[in-house]
Amino acid sequence: MKNNLTEILRRIAEAKAKYRSPDEEIRLMAVTKTVDPDKINFAVDEGVSLLGENRVQEYLSKKDSYDKTAEVHFIGHLQTNKVKYIIDSVSMIQSVDSLKLASEIDRHAQKVGRIMDILIEVNIGDEETKSGIDSGALKELALEIAKLGNIRLRGLMAIPPIGADESVFEEMHKLYEELKGMGDELPNAQIDTLSMGMSGDYELAIKHGSTLVRIGSGLFGARNYNV
Ligand SMILES: *Cc1c(COP(=O)(O)O)cnc(C)c1O
Image (cartoon, rainbow, N blue to C red; front, side, top):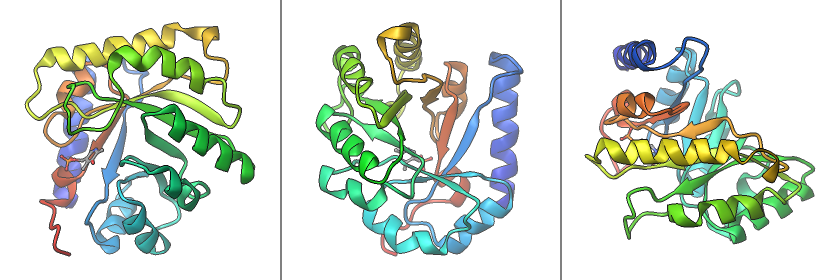
C-alpha cells in the first residue's frame, strides 16, 4: 500500500505540474469502504489526512478505531433519517442531492450547534442508476441551499461514468466555475471544492479543475465485499 500511495502522490504532482498553477491545492482522500481500520490507520500514518465514507453503518462500526488526526467526509448516498448519526463526526457531506436532504442536515447541524460544509452531487453522466441531481437543476438547488443558515455550500461532487469522455469532465468544470461566479447570489456559500476523480480517472479530473480526488482501490487494492 505504501508503494501505491507513493505512486498516486507522484502522479497527482505530475498532473498538477502539467495542468494547474503551483499555488492550487489538490487534496487526496482515501476512500475506506470495505477496508480494515488497521489499513486505514496505516494510510493516515503515511500522511493521508482525509478519509471518505460511503455507508453510515459501516462508518459507525469502524470510526472509533480510526486515528483521530484524520478528517472524515461522507461521500455515499445518505438517507435523511441517518443524518443524525454522522452530523457531529464528519466535517463535510459531499453527496447532497436534494433540498430535503439539505434541510435535514441544516436542522441537525443547528441542533448540535455547528455549520456543516456540504457539496452538491451532480449526476454528470445522466445515469439512471446514479444519485446526484441533473445539471439543469443545479443552480436552483444551490440558491435554495445557500439560504440555509447552518450549511455552508463549498462546491460540487461528481462520479463521472466509467470510461467517460473527456467532455464530461469539462462540463463538470464549467458547472463549478458557474457556481463560483454566482458570488453574492449564494450568501452562505464559500465555493472552493470540486470533488472529482477516482482511481481510474484522477489525472483527467485534475486536468479539468478537480481540487479533491477520491481514491479507493488504487490505494488499498481491490475491494472485498464479503468481509
Ligand atoms: C468507491 C468510491 C470512490 C473510490 O473509487 P475507486 O475507483 O476505488 O478509487 C470514490 N468516490 C465514491 C463516491 C465512491 O463510492
